[in-house]
Length: 318
Image 1: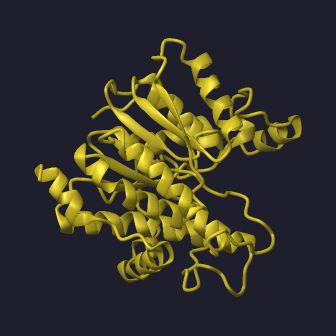
Image 2 (image 1 turned 180 degrees about the horizontal axis):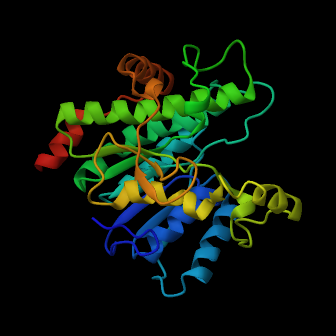
């Protein structure tokens, strides 16, 4: 079908959850969904930042319904927070889709661990979203919904095999980020394989934003306020970079386009910028042996077993 990122299909009556909604890709994905008539659970770790983002949407989408956004405190690095947030969402009924977007883009220089004892980048970007996907699976199945995992072009630049995903040895900020995104992408594809095998009508799709920067993004009070230096530096990369707003396009298309299918990989037309298109994921993220290994790592680390049988029963109306 013809797809116009600036004019989405009517999403009235649909409900989505976006993690990391207070800024960047998550904010713009939430805004685009609200403009199309959807209700969005906007989630973030900090209540004040979340309030600022919701206020920005009310200003920028003045004709949206008063309850078009719902606040949800969620820290994907904290498994207790994931369980609590998921319980709140499940209590509201079916869920048409979840955008697993929250993440650490600029990792710490030295290795840090979470309250659960996991390396913080891997926990935030991959483990938390694996756990959230499992916790929300029955709600997604009830609506034959979708989950979209956010990948990165970095996995094609330096395709690290996350043999040691927690980086107990040899930590570097770049390796931590790339490994977390290899894991996120591989888990997204593995989820789709397992969902299909279990007969659960939930599509798992991976999308990436290309090279999207704050300095090429519109200024929004409380959401995106880059310095003049940041704008100058980012605009020097105009040939390969795009705004966060445009970076959200592939994520939103994967979430709502009826022609997008489970197991697909979506990204900008040129790889780093442009309209959303189907792309070919980096080979390492498509390796089924690596994906199966990472699934077991995530299951063991989080203690979450995806309830495939329960989700299939929900679909059958059992």
